[in-house]
Image 1: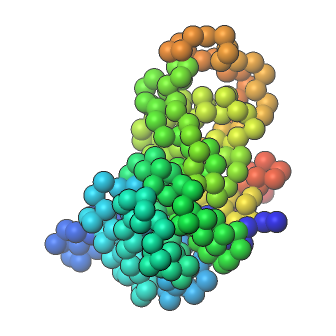
Image 2: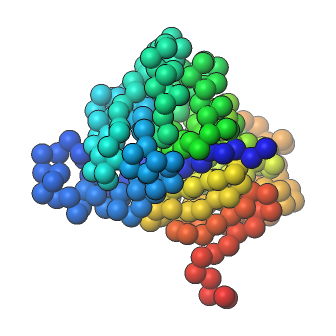
Length: 290
């Protein structure tokens, strides 16, 4: 059965300025660039009650949650969302508190901020909060939105460590279990700016059934029915398909040695392009051949 919820994953470090700056209102055209290109607005528009939807900003991944949370809440309010709050979950036992669970049950949208995705999986994984999150996503008109760490943690398989410069050396990429909202993909963020294509290649060559998704900054994917992906935002989404790999030296080389891959298929998506996870077919919105 297809999930009724929607998944919006964002590459992170978005061009939004700082909402804590005193000059925010004076420089609104600059500071709102990211939001007006559509990602946060799209989150609101895709939700059940639009601007009246109950939104919880979840800062668990961040080491500075008291700064990050209010910034996102202010951003949503600027876009006329009137029912926004920040849900601070900093310890594992908090993820089973009745007040926290009731707030999650009442939410139409959860927005997971950036930080360290291992904090998300280790603090929330296997808790009552996690169970309710998965149930709501599967059975309700509910949106899970996540940026950076919040995006990386959305899938079953999650990259949690791996340097960009050494990522195509065997063993440099570390993978664990994420929050499990979507199967058979693995997500990397800050993708273009931090040169992380090598580590996504290695993640895919180790399990070619998994589609690699690399999200550029100020870029996202809207995923509906567990299969329909639409690129949103101003940057690029890189998809890495390992199903047609012909050869690799992955199992032959020692740890720390370079990995070779023959015939790894990639796709590049930009705004409004779509990709179907069932058929693996991509449709370019403004194709020159239409």
